[in-house]
Image (tube, rainbow, N blue to C red):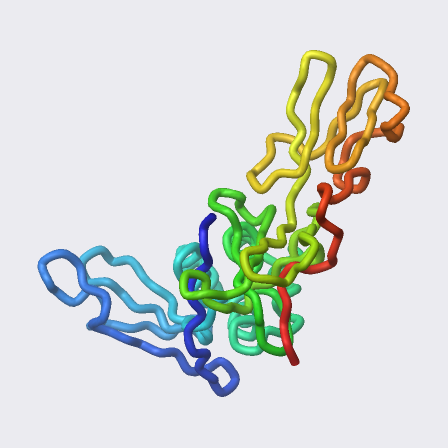
Amino acid sequence: MGRPLDRGNARVFDGYARRRMDVGKARPPGGAALFGLLSTLLGGCILLISPATGTTTCEFAGASTMCGSCVQANCQPAVNACCGDSTCTALSDLEACATQHGTTCTSLQSGAEGGDAGAALAACIGQSCRGECQPYSGRGTTSCSEPDGVQGTACDCVLPDADDPVNDFVCSTAAYPGTLCCAPDGWPGPGLQCACDVLSCDASQQGCECSLAYYLPSSQVCQTPYCCAYGDGCSCRASACYTYETVVTSCNIAVVSCPMGQHQVDSCSISSP
């Protein structure tokens, strides 16, 4: 299971106007300084110009937080494009989200950002940093992340330990629409894992078979003449449902339940006031 980036110490910026320029930290092969020599103020951002390649890197407030670190690692090109576009307002929402963890995080995740650059940045955050950049309050008491390769579709949580430190990653049905969050009996407890999984439907000889999965599914919905749900699975086929199955119009996340020994929860991530 892929673990999230460690959450650094958040730095407070007055009105998100100040930018840290840690020039000299990043160096290309040969030891020459990668960034420095020239900085350009554009659209409220500091663009660091690389003399070797001519590329620019936009610094933003909150880059040391869990959300900011994830965006830096996965969406920096989209940040750079937004920083260079005076009509892009998504950067200010990112900074507010990374430093305050408030409602602006919802704007980044809801597709409400305008303009091509803003929409591209929001899409990247939604796919690569969904759980890291969510509104939350209090302090996290769980260690949550996305499994490798799910691209913003599923997540899971465990109690923190030496290998999985506590973080503020939000893993819930609200943060991950289209999932079912299931906690084992006794959760939260040592050695237990709570997961918000997606429904994965695969073709079969008679139609399709669907079950909860922690990987990126090829399809999340299936429909044929007979669709039958039973526990955490659902199938659509040419023959009628068995007596122990529930007749449904289609197989989707709403018609399945948690596996035996588990119960449905709204959120796997837990925080304290």
